[in-house]
Amino acid sequence: MSKATKLIHSIPVDPLTGAISVPIYQTSTFVQEAPGENMGYDYARSNNPTRAVLEKVIAELEEGSAGYAFASGLAAIDAVVKLLKSGDEILAVDDIYGGAFRLFTHVYQKFGITVNYVDTTNADNVAEAITSRTKLVWLETPTNPTLKISDIKAIAAIAHSNGALLCVDNTFASPALQQPILLGADIVVHSATKYLGGHSDLIAGLVVTKTKEVGDEIKFIQNASGAILSPHDSWLVIRGIETLHLRVAEHSRNALAVAKFLQQHPAIDTVYYPGLYDHHNHIIAAAQQSAGGGVVSFTLKAGTTAAAKTVVCSTKYFKLAESLGGVKSLLCHPATMTHKSIPADKRRAAGVADSLIRLSVGLEDVSDLINDLESALNIAVSAHRLAEELVEIN
Ligand SMILES: *Cc1c(COP(=O)(O)O)cnc(C)c1O
Image (cartoon, rainbow, N blue to C red; front, top):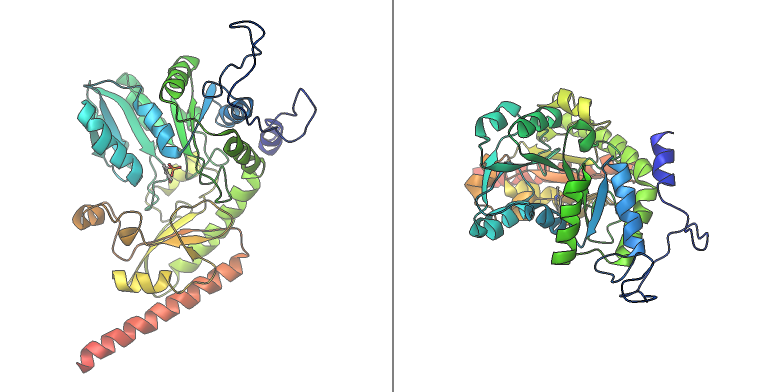
């Protein structure tokens, strides 16, 4: 069975009525025949039939044994951290999603869980930094916003020889492009807010585990902590997943064309995209991803926040907003938006330069997107030249 057929038919027809669309069970509780005698459902925090379909679908797509749906990507990440106990250490990619950094550092360190951030683009750095206290290795690949790539297979081997679990945040690639469990990961998390939902209309998170044992622990935490996904949002994610392969393939095609356009534009300094041959870890990306994905970042030769702000305020189709993975193209300026809470020196050291711009390339016609960027870049170039001339006059 091809991947597309598997994806579409992993979403079941309703066994009760034959409904081809998964029914939304908008209920809090389930009537029982006698105490403890029920049809597999008792209370909707513990289990809901609509959520159960999504959980089974994502487990199949990621080739894991169990899946769990949460109220946000961060709630999913939070559930994974709760596998740990005081004294344990997380070894995490240094260019980690800002919200995960905030959760690890500002919530969990005070409970005695330590976090060590390393540059995981070189697996040797992981081998050097891992200790007997490391119980969880945390990767994002590609990362946000500089699209760093880490070798999942190599790092899984290092984690396992040290008795640690490997968790991969697979939000940027999605299971359409990359399946970390097949490469050795023990846990996969998603912000389903992005490509899985795919329409910028919900907040959701997912966890998939390779083994049933780790899955049972996540299930216990999901029910005990209670950050579950609602039936309606579960349905929206299922509907998004129906077209995941089509969307992600087209996002990737458009993004590659945009990245190539940017590379040859005279106003651009560096383009970050794993699908480009000169990406730092292009060979690893090509081995573990079937395409580059829909996010492209770049810096400007002008190098300033002001120049970047001119660009992000001058596009017509790329809308200025945080988030990514939707049908409409978005762009953002990480230094003053998603990453503004990180001190400037730390932010720059992590590669988030003042002029860095992140694109979430959407599903519009790619020539319109390229024209849109070209005209915004030209506006920025003339504004910058004008500013330089004014300085000279003064
Ligand atoms: C957005 C995002 C998250 C957080 O997900 P929410 O749904 O916003 O809570 C986690 N990881 C990555 C890589 C993300 O892009």
